[in-house]
Length: 398
Ligand code: HEC
Ligand SMILES: [Cu+2]
Image 1 (cartoon, rainbow, N blue to C red):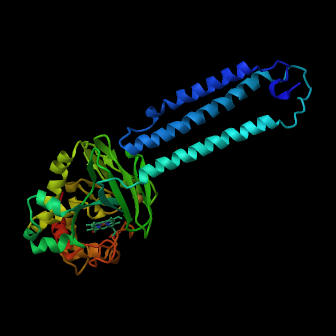
Image 2 (cartoon, protein in one colour; image 1 turned 45 degrees about the vertical axis):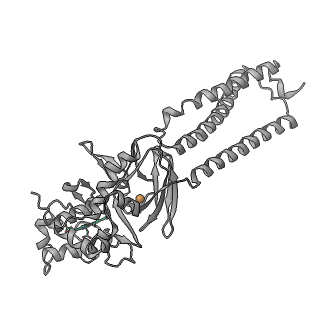
């Protein structure tokens, strides 16, 4: 009697039954694998297709193993249950070389194939693509900032010659020879390979765009990076996937009651032309020709999201909804009387340069210090500070 294919009640399992069972299990695995599109978000990038392909492959294998294990379990419970008055022991089985060989070989093959497949997907995702759009992403408690380069060629496109730019503009926006501008959202177009370089100003964060299937940690003191190529126009949520403090939840893009996008989102335009017309040119123009009026300038600087204020403060004029710090809607009314010996301007400037010196009662000392020194994190030049103060003083709601 061969114990491997004879059950306790003496009926044997034929090869045909094993083959039919095997086919059913694998077919079941494929059926469950086809459900993937229903349980994952839209595939917004070429990488998403690859990642989902790998996921589906693992799901088919996992589902087949699930059906095998639970199928055998169900059959065993029914067919080999203890009958009334049967107190006998089962047959004493000792080793089965063929069986052990098979159940070692199959998992070894599966793991090897998965390793090679996953490695090739990772290789594709991380490889350098031609004509990449490079965007610097800065994460800090509790906001994302996206920095775009304005190249010499773009300047021509915008109808500006470099020499035409005023001394002022050069002084505030040229950094290492390149013109850059910040924006609170990431924008690109279908088919454009994007290379994001990730910097953190404080603790570790993680940059996650579920629709693109990319997620990469930001590590203090290091620059990390990730690549993706969008294939579907639309707006996609950007999320921080590393618990980074009390405002962590504010590092995810949200939609307010009026349907407006708040916080960080990825916007994928249909083509380069639409991207240039609707996003790039207006934003670059704003930066190249900042308003002369300090109030308008302060508003523009804050609206660009260069500083992470939005995630900690409410300011209805700009759609800010953070609640880590005081509401700034009426800051213009109380700035002059907050602190003895300080004018409204001095108080606001000091709140931004040295927030720890006077902590508003009822709040934690959580606000970062914005420094006049470019070598320090959270650099804020004096002209930005003055414009922001001028603008905040006009906020006198209620
Ligand atoms: C990490 C959260 C955080 C960020 C980012 C942040 N703040 Fe604050 N802010 C606070 C908190 C908390 C307080 C109250 C405690 C204190 O006074 O330091 C505060 C206080 C203030 C005050 C004084 C408010 C009052 O009622 O007297 C001003 C003005 C202010 N912040 C402006 C800004 C501006 C402008 C920015 C961006 C450049 C900014 N904050 C960024 C958390 C933040
Ligand atoms: Cu974070």
